[in-house]
Length: 245
Length: 323
Image (cartoon, rainbow over all chains, first blue to last red; front, side, top):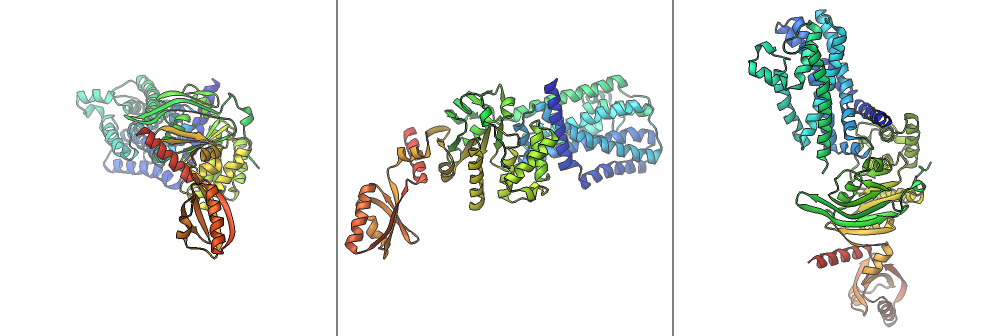
């Protein structure tokens, strides 16, 4: 228990350091606000209605914000050689990954709160299940942040990270129900969707807003979101271990 | 204030014990079964040319590279089994100054301290103590990226000391620094060692190793080819000794280089540097030369054996042995 607490403390230190160094800067914060606002405006101009738009917009800004931020900080640190410093401290690889996820998580929460405020002001929409929405957003933010960290370690050469990153992230965006509703996907593609972690987060957020679901019941969606987060955490820790020559 | 060191709390009879250490990168064997011991409180130098296996050895000892063969103990902890414990009592200064560019000096040090489990208040206190010790107090709020190369090196060194480590690993500590910054880092290393800190230093700078280290291991192509104190190495591998001499008026250099016992002579400002194959004979020849030509012998001083000469000789012999 004591060891776990000390790991958590160190992970929080990493998160605090990342927030100071990368996230809490005026350009990053404004990007976190401008991005959801631009998306909301774009979808509204295309005639999308509020009840459909709200969950998709929140999930989309979370997905883009959280995955980009965690990946950007790691890719930068790997290039500069400062990521190596974290490996010198008495903390496990899982602890390091959790610290990196936490910083992106806090930023994601800020960004999703801003998105929610924009949606509320534009459409006056209230979620059907507010508590479920909070639990879903927390799970989704953890999952997306971890996904960003995983992808930035899955590539050996940091300079190729963003190319690999977008080639994975963009298809995910179209297949997890964020932009195209599942009902419009061919049945075989829905099975592919079930293999993608963001599908579960999207489904639970949609249910919390609209009170109905397309592909998965909310309990399964939420539990799967949290389980997939833990799996991604450990897989990333394995990738770090593997990256040591 | 001088940072406190933990040398007296040391466990185990040696700070570092390495036996038959091996490292492969694919098919290439970077470290080929080296063994050495570092005593508590000493400055141990790992000297060798680029690509000799120095950094790889440090990386294995601090967990940045896997150990492919052999045994290693750091501060009494067996690697890799007790790596996390070992990490808690060592400080590492890598060959690049890799602190966080956007963080201030004080934030970088506080972060490092907190990663070793030190609470926020104590971390700040130690960080300010170290800034003072390293003469960086005025730069406390400056971002790391805004520091000069020399100051970046000093802060990276400070970050490795925040938790009062028992052993400090320094990988090429003065690489790329100007002479002034280099001397300043040397002074700091001596000061830290005099306060009880064990230092493991890698360098390709011969004078750095001979200036700072109590003992030196010379590594070439993954093998330790010689070891001993600087004096022992000089004695063991010396075939010639250097002498500095000054005459008035100064004679032509060709007249000196042909004298008995002298293998080479070159001018260095007002004086002449002589490499003597037989020091006694060379001094006798020089005195006779001055007397016969009616020159005034201003001074004659032994410069000992040039460190560079010893190093090159050892490397030359190791290549010949392998051939």
